[in-house]
Amino acid sequence: MNIVGMYSFNNGKEAIEAKFNAEFQEVQQAIEAVRGKSHKTKTSREKTMPGKALYSPKSLNIAFEAEFEKRGWRNQRVLCDYSTQYYTSGYAPSAKTRGAFRDIDFVKNKVGVEIQFGKYSFMVYNVCAKMTIFHKMGLIDVGIEVVPLKELANEMSTGVSYFEQIVWDLEHRGVADIDIPVLILGIAV
Image 1 (cartoon, helix red, strand yellow):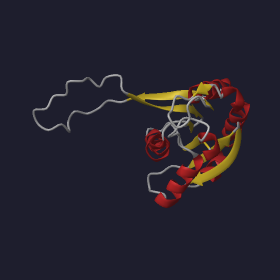
Image 2 (spheres, rainbow, N blue to C red):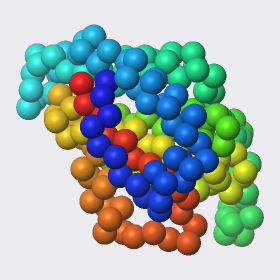
Image 3 (cartoon, rainbow, N blue to C red):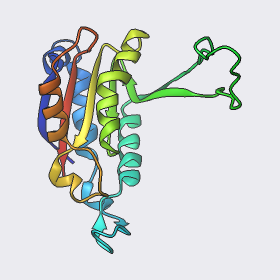
Image 4 (cartoon, rainbow, N blue to C red):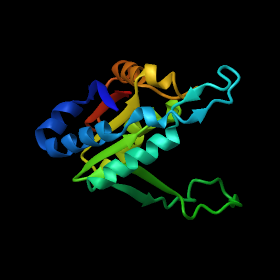
């Protein structure tokens, strides 16, 4: 895969280059080591493109996981201890919330990386909520969000998020006081 787009949110590129250049080099190497064309293994069952060969997010995620793990990056998971104090009086939930967690795909030396081939809402959640939570917990200082360019997303199932979307949203949203530095990387085959 090739990195063909970079967007620096809240000075993400500058922060990463200043303090985490070695980690950034590893991220670039891991991305470039994934052979994208070998992951066009999914056959569409969607009405808009029946039978079309598509890139498989599952296969791509497995390949990225292998490349990041080779370089010492690990998934970071935190358990969620949900409070019941906000239920209205007398309400007792029927479902247990034990075992709930949040995770970030890869963490190394306070750099958090998310690879996102999912729906649009997950891309925004990663940057605007999840990375902030992991920062507040002291687990990361900066984030890197890896997403496909629109041309690659067009070769995947419908609804996959893409680089141009998140750049537009973040530019129009602006930076909030709680946002951490995040570098958005757009990738293509």
